[in-house]
Length: 152
Image (cartoon, rainbow, N blue to C red; front, side, top):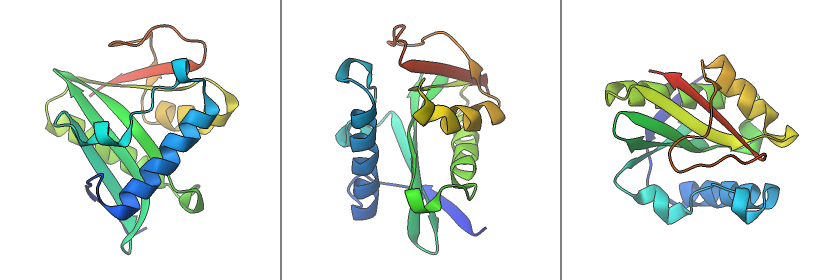
């Protein structure tokens, strides 16, 4: 694998396109009150580090780290459909975890869907050391949400 990860900007055309795909997919899978996907412009805020995983210049995945004091949240993880099953998401998640560690964060949490369409994501996160947890931050209990966390 010759993957490499760099900082990304929402203004990059390929990043914007993959983020739009992610946003549309998440909106299609959950009703508005249960969909916690960030609008693209929110990913350009100073408390968010947006990363892009590429291979030979081609964008394969995006993911973000949002900081809240001593803990962080994984946001907007999305792998291009053509790149799935190649270890891309795990490679990017490992970099997000390392980024959280380098920033001195103590915990990393996430919210993902609870339905079958998110089963692969939940398995990925569990294999990376995330465990189930109650809602965190401003989240509230929602049967369509699944919350996970891990120490850094």
